[in-house]
Length: 103
Image (cartoon, rainbow, N blue to C red; front, side, top):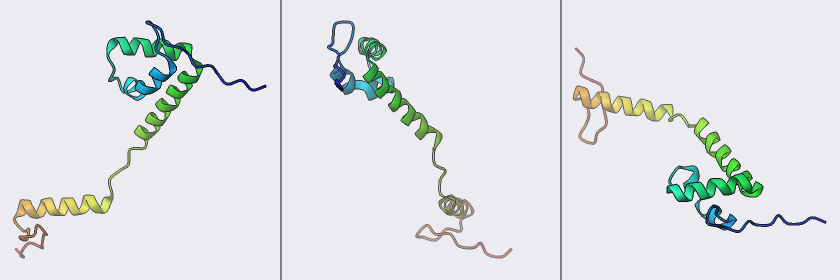
């Protein structure tokens, strides 16, 4: 028999599963007040189901942070050329650069 895990009810000291799921992202981002933070932390320690959910969110967030994409090199080159054209006064009226006159 495969019994469903029971959801934990909230108390004054500990949030319920439903309350935790509503604020989990804010909690993990550090955007909850002191009382909510304490109640959620207590719940996550006691509830395996919610604790695993929080761990999954943390792993996803860490993975995304590690995979910070580098900007497209063509875009960087175009931006540098545009900045150089502006700095040297060789930009056209439409903002496009052109080659500086021969020296």
